[in-house]
Image (cartoon, each protein chain N blue to C red):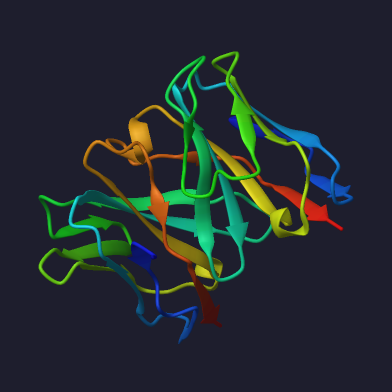
Length: 112
Length: 116
């Protein structure tokens, strides 16, 4: 049973527009959420995170929103750039667990 | 500063062969992890370690063994490789457990393993 789900395997947007990547989770013990970005032939790199005590966190063009009641988070990229084309993973951790649980990823393509 | 280094980068094995993947980190991190990435499955945790001399099972530990004899190294072993273990393997380390706090898991570049 997947505890972290990214239901959209791919997303294509025009350069300059907004990209919205979604993530759902089922475990109510999760209290820390992260987004990672992965380019081909490279390891994932940390992008942005949010604690369950917040509902929004911004870092430049990237904003993560958390809706705890819906167990849903989203990553907004504004404006999108071709260099943002990558696979984005949502991840979650919480409780006494040392584990970071990842979703299956969404491949973002930003068209020039 | 190398960060997290994995060796080898590529390996082809025959069914039943054994091998060891080596992960080395130079950031003095306490926590280290081995993940595997498969199409449509994301990153799944195989084993992890919360300090030198300690290891624990993750989501998909069967068929793998690990050792953390030195703080900077985390080894992943396959005693008898199976085609189902064909995957890309990522090692990661962190200062905080599970990536909490700073949120940073630092990943290596990955090791692509093919089992024929």
